[in-house]
Image (cartoon, rainbow, N blue to C red; front, side, top):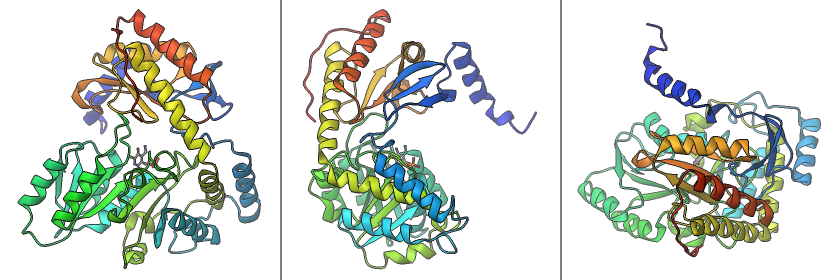
Length: 405
Ligand code: PMP
């Protein structure tokens, strides 16, 4: 038995998938032509699974600033933020983010994954309690494992269940931290944040919101779900990423709580890894400015999301419960989902395939993320293609609905 024997079940599942002729985990883009078009196996392919919400990956100013930063500051910092890895641009981006979120403090991490790891594992310890939504992103769960706080899971998007669990621990000493997401990355549903805020207040807990998928997307100014719901003052920590609306890589946490800065010397995923290259900082600063200066991108994204969600729902697909830029088609039979995904790719459309056990209820999702850079023609092409294939697979009853987004 080799050291890899423990992966036998996973290996067998992967082999079965490959035998079906589809391998969603090894798609390679021969070329990327724009924010929404690439080339896969020689075929021009429309990209509907990129998280590139504002369509900024090819923004001319951001690319120029990034190239300039490489020429002036080199390709990498080769060090940690608390050693040789803090340049002026790191501090500048932290200031820009704090200003955008109207908070006093900001820490930039090397990825969004590490931002969750670094915040969650450090904010609460063994004498505290951590309350996680059951559908939390892997980085939130992994942050809970890296830290030492007892973890309490509550039912997805269920403030009553959270309240019940907090009530049970009401007389326990220590801090209580609740973590939820703005838009959930698989189904595209939003957290009932006002209700969570009521619960947080009642039990004197802290609240962290991961706005990875809602930054630049929700709220009049694009600060996310907390802005849209008017509860920013009650959110103690906002975590986010640069890898979606800001079209680069990296993560951050903002807060106005006094004492926050000590985390720079306590958060291991911040301290014990190299900082991001200055080129990334520069393009991210540029993208953040564009996000703030061009709200019309958000307006277009909203319109695109509505067009796509309504189109698929109107065709009879079983879509996620809310209209956001993450549009998931739920397919009960994973084998059909795999075959469907493969057909889409062959016909020139790429989206994400999510399979059990990573999905709830043993169903599979064809997960799209809409971009402001999609044209009406792109969206109509995608709806028509999915409808044609959906009919071939016998998935489509008829139903019409209107998007509430
Ligand atoms: N939080 C959520 C909710 C996410 O969906 C993701 C990435 N998909 C992350 C955090 C991690 O972000 P990054 O890609 O910057 O590591």
